[in-house]
Length: 280
Ligand SMILES: [Zn+2]
Image (cartoon, rainbow, N blue to C red; front, side, top):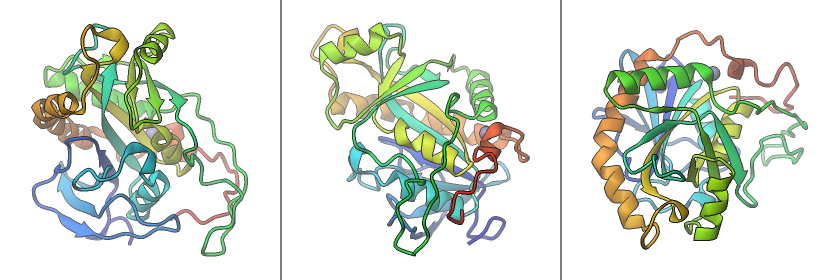
């Protein structure tokens, strides 16, 4: 499948907790990849004159925990449909009292605290199809697309949502939430929010020369930042449900604002290095 056809798209949206339906009128496509199947079918439709592919990150029914999501398959599947710009809304916990439930961050940094997730396509290991990736090193100093971030911030603010410009997302392995000690430590580092899916999603997008923008919706104050019982999954889903319509509106508008011609560094992230495998 290629961009421009009915089965193609140029913008991808990877939904998060409580965020399974994004488009009203969609065509469903099953996509396989050299890394196995993605989390679910991809749902294609048109928003603001752009073709959008939506992928439920945890699968419909939320059956995949963060550490079992096939991130490589997800990003590969999006790219194989023609996607070059990815929006990644996700639910996070706030590490500062001012980032309470309902706050929206467009982070500019991340810290990887995951364990044992496959975080590269370029591991030198031959794939099932016989292609063997080279060892490639990609710059990740600024993990998010500057154009996507600017579009997300401008859009949210236009809609009256005072989105936080920047901040660091700490990504933990999960599926458990943090202990109070871990949460206090994360906060003491100056990190802003904590999530479970932002890595390796962002780096795998970068390795495929995709733009990636994170929109982090705070659903709770993390254990160290609140007084009370700590985070519960029910609480996370409730806050997400309250804000999902608002977030959907913002995402629709961001889609229309993303530049059609990319001038950001994401587009040339491999910097001329030979990946050894053919990118779709
Ligand atoms: Zn970009």
